[in-house]
Image 1 (tube, rainbow, N blue to C red):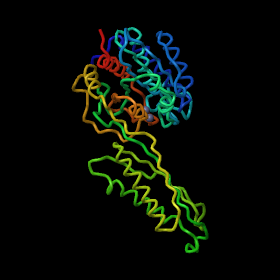
Image 2: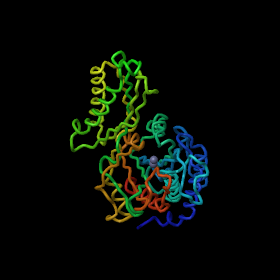
Image 3: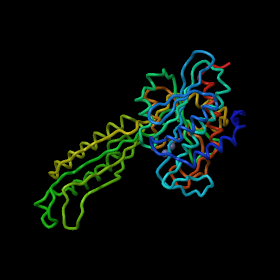
Image 4: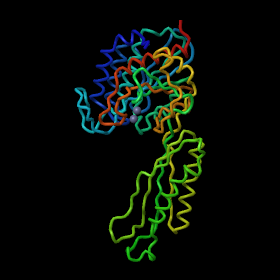
Length: 384
Ligand SMILES: [Zn+2]
Ligand SMILES: [Zn+2]
């Protein structure tokens, strides 16, 4: 391991920052106290910043002369779940937990910021983005809508996520798709309610519901190439209230994951056609709504990330053939506006998975991640 000595020397200070953040998770776009804390740290480093999006923060470090603008992003939000680690620094708020390690990502970015305060011998500008609302609250979109890419001509952008199941000295870089898209759909089947004894006098919705669910299972098997990846899951069915009433309405909801936007199109069309088909067959009305929540996260600049990672953890510990995850990440929205790369840093082979109530961020990732960002900067901006 070849950590930046100036970053590694601050381990105890960084660990205490991370553990402080861990005690006070904030959810969604309401990262008010976290932002205030980050501001006090940036003030102490002498680094300027501006508010952006909703409770997100953009710090700026100018180099020695003009050049490209490179952005780095960390997410800051926790989750609505109750922590069960029993750690001395566990969340002080029941029902809220840093269960995805965004406390660690925030600290990693602060470690990188502190490093940059002493190392701005590059040509160009570095932007450090501290983002709210990654966990399904459109935090990245709020920043883009607030004009990030209009205010700054960002040449490339980088980010990381800790990843349980890989060792602390492993970095995973996907050349191409890294994380899946997430789409959500709602189907409302409208029939006509009535007494359970006389279905012929009602318009019974459940037969249509059953055929839709069964048909949805065959979309991936029969409509998607065996070379592509996709998941269609039915996640909710709501309808009915009594043993002896045929309900008028049933609502079905589901979730779709792919790593190719053309596959998203096929699935949306197929499910829509299926909804129309079951409606015609059973004489019900079908109202189908398909919402694209997160795009596919595609890495367009894996090479500098691979070289930078190799300098930190050694070539043999940079994994470039790993399967992409079917989970999604709203960092994907940034990649629709700039080139860049998003990597995984191992959180420990035996770490509980993210979003688990016994999960904890591995503080070693702060040193690996910040050293990786520092090496990456040397890759993309000339330095003396
Ligand atoms: Zn998460
Ligand atoms: Zn996360």
